[in-house]
Image (cartoon, rainbow, N blue to C red):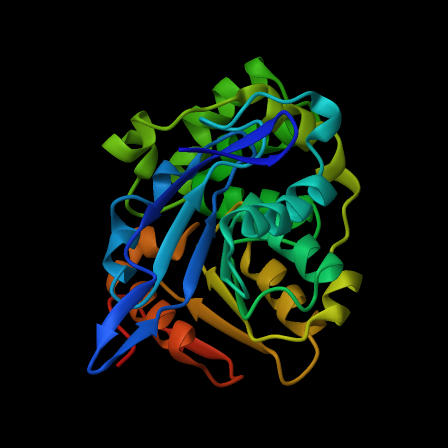
Length: 297
């Protein structure tokens, strides 16, 4: 469905699961899990169908960022982190959602970090998944070279220094297959995604180059789970450690997955979903490492 969040601006929204469920003589309200996809330029479809498994513990709200996917097209001047972050509040107001659990994956994690800075009392909990607080190009290039050799490093350097159709084509060949051990770029979920490349190119050539989201994390006043794969080349583990270190005690928790890449649930679905269930219910502020193939119990 398309939900108007302000005049002339509609976001595509899909909702899974009941918000109220029978619990003995009463109705119990489940938390709302608001999912923010990566990119920029992609859509929410990468969360499906895996995240349906969380519908028993939360009402799940999927949506496409402003200008993305099935949401209304919008001018490039609106493709900013401030606008996307404020859209979370606008969408919650439109849907009557109070204190959501917000999950931001990759670029969605950039948005979630800015949201934490601009609206520190709005969420009940936030998940920052496979994301970064700054460009950190040298870290990216080192990881791409480690996982894919010189060709991957060269393709990554070319794209991030000159984003566009030509460099993206080479990046798709040499870099994107390195994001995960299980390669989502070739599966059905990847093929059915709606991709708007001009948003990616504008962001990679513009705001991403100079962004520094770390100072804003000082405003955090709710539990924040940072999830990171140790084999992630595009948002390397050092980025997650920077984020976790910037979150004031006692709010931050860093969980790393030794055998996972970008979007840890793609490589370790059982462990990732177990962790998310735990966090939605309530989690301690500790750092945890999850070995390949091991679920949290």
